[in-house]
Length: 118
Length: 108
Image (tube, each protein chain N blue to C red):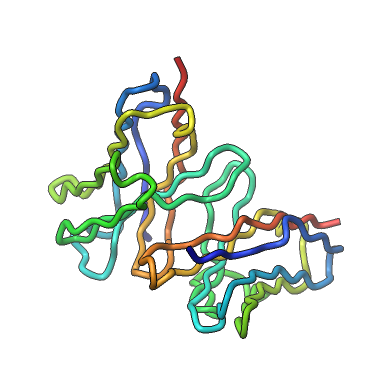
C-alpha cells in the first residue's frame, strides 16, 4: 500500500521560504508510471494544484505560482520536496503531497498546515 | 481557462440517492475524477475515468459523464457519506488540472 507523509515547519514569517518534504513508502519516486506533486487548500476553500515532478526530474508548475515554486526529487531517500519563496499570508493553507499517473491524484498524504504570520 | 461548476451543497435523507453535478464545457469529452473529503482529512479518490472505482471504494459510488455535465451518484446514502466532494479534470489546453469548487453533502 502506498503511503505519503508530509513534513516541514508549520509556521513561517512573511518573506520566508516554505520548505516541505514528502516521504513515500510502498512505491518509488523513480517509478516511471507516476508524477509526484503538491496541492494546497486554504482553510474553508477549495483545492489548488501547485505542481509536480516526474521521475526524470521534469517539472510542471501552476503558472500562478511558477515564479516562486521549485519541486525536486531525492531518490536516495525516496522523497520529493516543495520550496515556495517569498511567502505571504495568502500562502497559509494545508499542503498535500500526492501521486498522479497523469489524470488524477491518488493517494494523498494526510496534509500539513502551514501558517504564514508575523 | 477551463471552469468546473458544482452546486455548493446537496442534501439527502439516509437510504436515498444523492446526485452531485459537475458542469463544464463539453466535459463529456474529458476524463472526470471525483474526490471525497471528510472534515480534517485529506481528499480520497472515489471515481476516476468518469466511472471507475478505485480499489476499496464502495459500489454505492458511481459516476457518469456526458455533454456538459458529469454526475457523481451515491446510492443508499449513509451518515458516513457526509463530506465535501470535488470533481476534477485535466485541461489539455493549459496542461493543468482543474478542480470544481466542491459540494458539501449533508445527510439529513
